[in-house]
Amino acid sequence: MKIVMLGAPGAGKGTQAKMIASSYGLPHVSTGDIFRANVKGGTPLGLEAKTYMDKGELVPDELTVRILLDRVAQEDCKNGYVLDGFPRTIPQAEVLDAELTKLGEKIDYAIDVEVPDENIVKRMSGRRACVNCGATYHIVHIPPKKEGICDACGSELILRDDDKEETVKNRLAIYHQQTQPLIDFYSNKGVLKEVDGTKDSAEVFEDIKKILG
Ligand code: ADP
Ligand code: AMP
Image 1 (cartoon, helix red, strand yellow):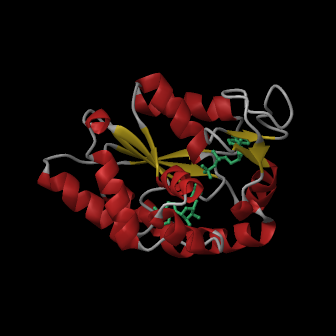
Image 2 (cartoon, protein in one colour):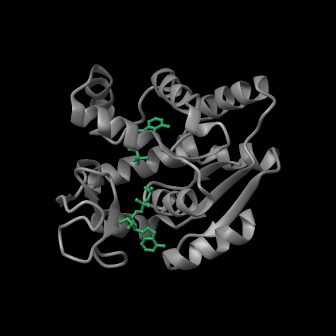
């Protein structure tokens, strides 16, 4: 099963992708997580990606596509995966589609998590991410057991630099311009499914399970 998560930054793609991954035994592939791991490790890829991420811009397609195709070619992805944060542009979706077609495969579901813009800034300012394992929380909606500490690994939780209000506004504008057209792209392929992302995260997951069966 190959799944693409669509939705604005902060819509809850990562939250749902992790739940799908653990329930259905699929790897969770997040290009944002891959870039952040490289930024943390100070790799050349990380240094390049950081210049775009800090401004809330997209990392160029050529680089992003290469990273993603390398990742999905790994052994653990052979029975499927949940893509979170990729594709984010039509050219990225077209390359993925072409690569899958070569293998006689396709995306089975594109799940669009719908949340209006006015909710997004609030969500992002409350998001906290683990510096070590990348787990995400929300200070009000999905709080960790102990404030500021990751439930999963005990490390510190931080506000991501790109979750500051001005950067979030830029990310939202870029989302509408470059990523939202993917909704039509996957709708035309007959695989688009929409869920109401304003519901509680457990309820959103119930709706997704009904779709995936
Ligand atoms: P994305 O991966 O789409 O950028 P996240 O999954 O990181 O979004 O969610 C953004 C923020 O909103 C996080 O702080 C997360 O804990 C919180 N969140 C996720 N789903 C919900 C929900 N259904 N209701 C309220 N807050 C949510
Ligand atoms: P995310 O964690 O998905 O919100 O991604 C964080 C940042 O990483 C984005 O704001 C982009 O700068 C970069 N990024 C992640 N995925 C992509 C992608 N598919 N294309 C371009 N840039 C990306």
